[in-house]
Length: 332
Image (tube, rainbow, N blue to C red; front, side, top):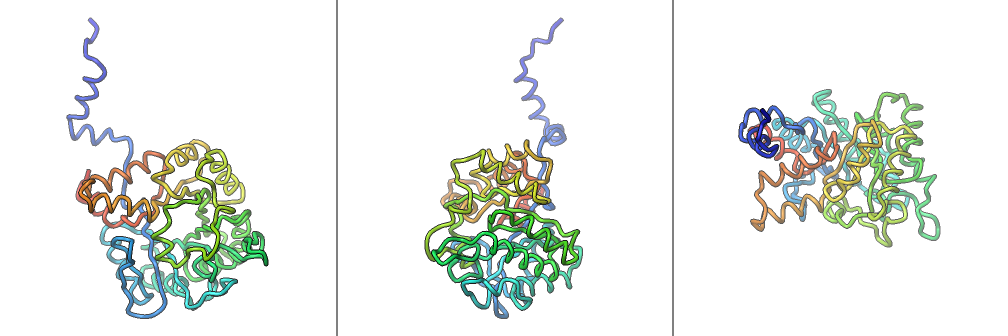
């Protein structure tokens, strides 16, 4: 005799059995898959809340370990470092100096925690140039791609020497991954992976970050070297070109608004995928929570599970510590 139950009845029965439903969960999320951004600045004794970026601080090198320790207690072991320099100029010449906050923080954190932490360094020039663009400029104000890529190689090598476990180029210069790979290999860092911001969109959702990093362009915009939000095929092609150049991990940025790109890229490559839940997306969630329109715990978890479901292996997120604590409490 045929079973008269409908498929929906059988699905409901599985969902109502909580322990069985947990065993059958198709997507998992663990603290080890979260990467916490850290902003390091010149000076000493600094821990200042960043306006417009809930729960995120500027840290001086002597105090940034406090933020790392808090994250480690929650189970987060990976960090990506951004830095504000002691001086800016048109060439971003402080970006590769050993006395700058990122290099000093890498040294400090590695000396203290060693292999207990995985340190990623953002490789770009926008924080270091006085014009706020991600590379060197020509006389007529355009980004000069090839010399800029060479500078990124120099910056990446300085980060690797300081203790970076992974370097993450975000400038979107053509050929930057290949240049950085050669610089690392020639410098003796053949084992240092490159996590490329391989599909980085010209997005309106970077505002709070640019204020935090002092990296807003002083003129024009970055549409000439960042991907247009309208073009998914171009976005996938950008990432696959970085894979050909030697990237070890590919990234989609932003993420919540670009899960279609993340999902399509997951089908196009076997490389690990990262995504960045960027400052504007994070604050969109935070403002909804503050307005009472979104349950904080469920909303934060749902957003991060969605990124895992779309194909992300790693999630860079300002909510890393909060999400890790929720997961440790057995949520959801």
